[in-house]
Length: 255
Ligand SMILES: [Zn+2]
Image 1: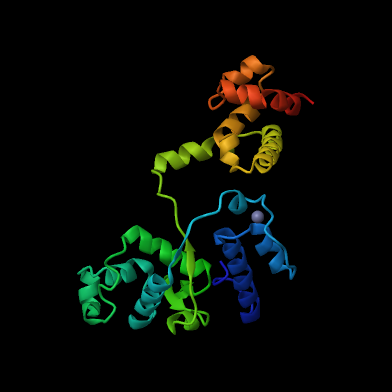
Image 2: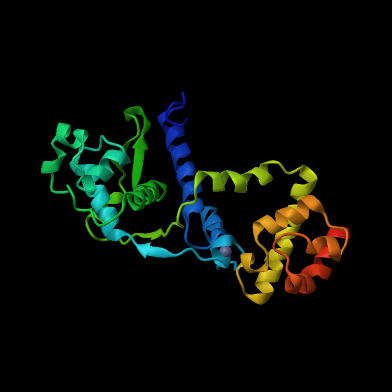
């Protein structure tokens, strides 16, 4: 949308910077609050309360993979999307590789040790971290940005989030459906339940999901149990959790 806008070059530059800041916030492996306040020029310490503080994502040193990916973009002339670039890195003899003679490049097959799905994550994170930018005028060809230089020269290390194993499509749809279908009143209650869960998690210094999974909170919000008996019928609330959290939940639900 930014690429297609009628705005001036300056407008697009600023829009891209904002988009990158937003994507960076999404992808950060550190505290969201630190990142957010940093955007507005304020220093902060980790809040202990955001999702990355409560459940710190695993990271890995992706410097070498990033350098290979960026070299591949450069050697192939910055005119291909990630799909072809991954084929080159993994040494796949596709028609396209043959057509462009990319099997003769020094980067051909240098990333065969990394799986295709993992490479897709690397390329996506390179974009969100601002080292690479898709050129929509050139059908999504990936180009290097200025910030890629220190990495290519070996002067900068890149850590990336380790992605959770992908779930099947149906699992994603099942998980999203109840959230899209909630009424405003249920959504408000769900927010309060999440805040309550956050407090519990903080007090006990455990990740939020240890208290209750999202699905359980959604079920509580939509069914609004009237007493402990009804609460106990909700999936994810066993006897121990009922005893421990039931009274507090009842107060929250009916105050
Ligand atoms: Zn935080």
